[in-house]
Image (cartoon, rainbow, N blue to C red; front, side, top):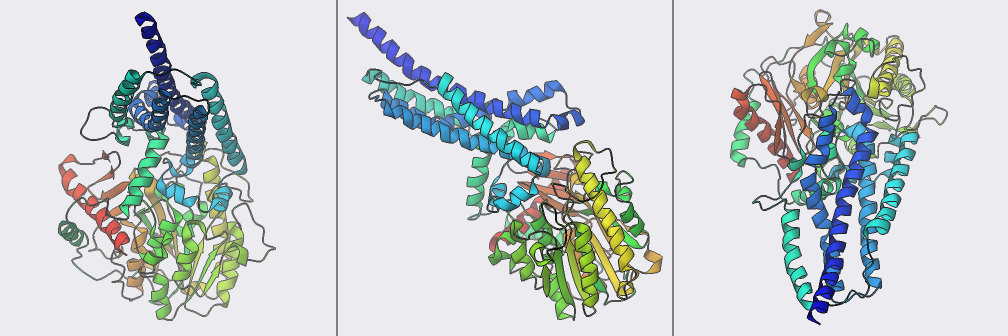
Length: 630
């Protein structure tokens, strides 16, 4: 009798324990299957970057601890069900577990497909900021190539349905009338929670596991693949939601940060070099979507991509050390018009209660007699840009639906040649002096510009460089026509990118090279002796405000993050933000810091590490603190 009870107990224990272990194993295998699909999807980038096969395999090794932690989180609910089933196991309880697993599988499959979709453009994982963009699904759809969108939907459906089938067929076992053993149930309920806690914390350690556990490579794509999607998204959402109650970038006390900022911006001489023939020119601002410095030959790019831009340089001043502070269009808009640097987590343009407290170049100019207009061939709803542009007080705003219906359009909107031609004709009707801004469109995916693709190289960025070639051609046509207009000789053209983009050189997204952008002051109003020259001052887009207003003899004190790039005494630095950190550039060194994995990149000079680190962190802390307190 005793032997029979022992066997019954062991059989009972075996079914419960095996069910738990089989489900745990399933999640570990599922995470790696999704990871493998991601790697195969971007195999071309792995080949282009010449990543060794052994290093690619490291993805599956370095991901184990974070995968196990994630699996332990997921297994908390199935564990509770198993505890119930150890004492009471009707058939219907199994369906609760199956539905739960189905929801998790579907959600994770969606993150897997989503990350495949966004990595090519943003070089990051699915984060809180990306999720906020999903409030405009139409814009997301329009930004993706149709074929790519269909493929990703198919990948999602295949992963979700295929994995659910495999889970039900090979890993989940229905537990019905498994018997009852109170001793075992008590042991199971006591021992397993301790194991789960150890697993989800990443072991017996003082600090719980985080994404840094999976960082192991200098190749960003391998780190992205290694970090568990669900864990990363969980941390991003809950940590960043909590960030709105406290500053996550408080690296030092406020007084120390304020002292460092004062030192950073100290200018010994408040005069500027006047580069224009007049202090009240017309101003045309051309904002180039996603233009990297690698598109410009004289900024280190390959020749032949933007030949028209190269011609313009001969009659302008090229800035060869300007960087985008962010990587999104709405961040670029706040930097250009409001002089406010980009920051992690979110963008100030998506919150009207905050951006209304920013200064505005447009409003300064309008107070001084300028009329104003803004042109964009697409829809400005993305990133809440429209409300921000309206706040700036433009007299006239033209977006996609406002243009004549007869103008040809692509998937995203009106092609650059038509918006440029429309503006060129429209500003001729404006009273001088005027300020007109145009945001180009065609260098954004899906690259459906109505033009041949003459550049036969570029690998994974072949479509991108050909789109830039098209926009450059449109610029050439625009200036050919503009030179015939009576307003041309009294007009300053400022050409600058809203942010950078991955180039054919595939820079690491945390590198300064990745964030470098073109900027050009061009026109007959530029003093003849300065045409064809280069300004080497380190700066950002948010320096446009002080730089431009200095030439117009207008005050720029409200733009306190903006410095005059034509003032030889102004400090030299550039700043950019990552998804969770800061990039800081000085003439004598630079670094990038990611708060999530607590990881530093690219110390140029170890002797200067501490001073540069303090400067960059103080800058990020100050910018984010102002964003929160606005």
